[in-house]
Length: 160
Image 1 (cartoon, rainbow, N blue to C red):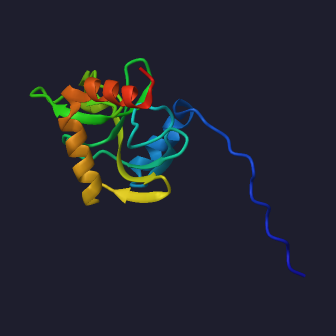
Image 2 (spheres, helix red, strand yellow):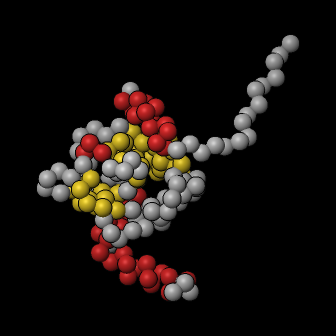
Image 3 (cartoon, rainbow, N blue to C red):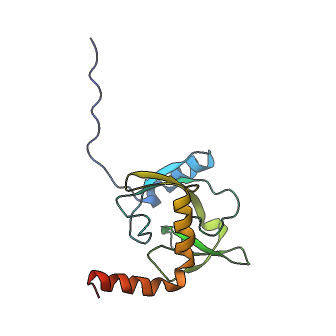
């Protein structure tokens, strides 16, 4: 007699990244990847919280401008923001795509992982995708003009 298939779980549960950080870091050290659903809105318009996912890999060497690392702030908060500038002292200037105030002084030892693939609106992209490469270069270049762009967008939508 055949056994019936196991039921699929129907409940989704959110787990704090701080709670699973040791397991995540161990998986990355072993050469694995980890896929997480994005929370928050700081990476909009590229990544939307609750909708999109990122695949993270271990950080190997120095990051470059436009890379998207997961790092830990001194207060323990995990953040996924884009590198907008590599400083001469080796630290990084980071900024979310929905922000215009860069975070200064992020050090190499704060880096946990770097994003290598994305599921955005159900479509998978990698860092090699030409449209994503153009988007991230243009969006980083537009950093000084983001406040104006956001104000114009709000006016067009009638939110101003």
